[in-house]
Image 1: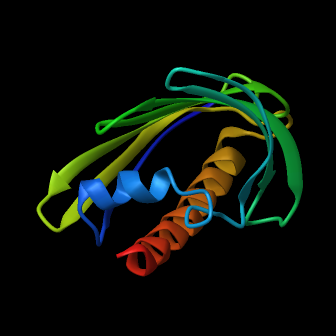
Image 2: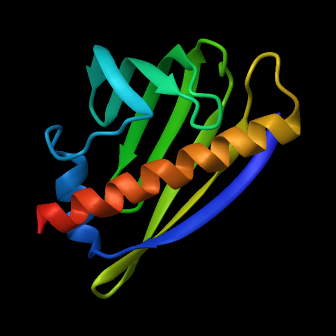
Length: 140
């Protein structure tokens, strides 16, 4: 297990981020694709997803639960798959026309040591951050 913290600043206000998050056609990722929604209750969504590992290019199927906590952020928990037990929180802080995002959590990947997990997770978040920032520019 690797405890990881990462952050960045989006070039969009917090309200735009939440609008984009709720727009499936605008909020897509190459490294995280929902294949099926298994359950939806209140602010919780359980999904079957395909996750691509940017450093290796390999993909894996996972079952995740996302708990939305607007406008503060959201929590993700991996319920089934190679990353089972992973939990992380995305926290948003408004900065006027920009928004700071902090991601922190405990990450697991079956068969990988902490340094491999760290490399994979940080590459994944870097890719997703840049995809999100591009989507936010198109969303305005």
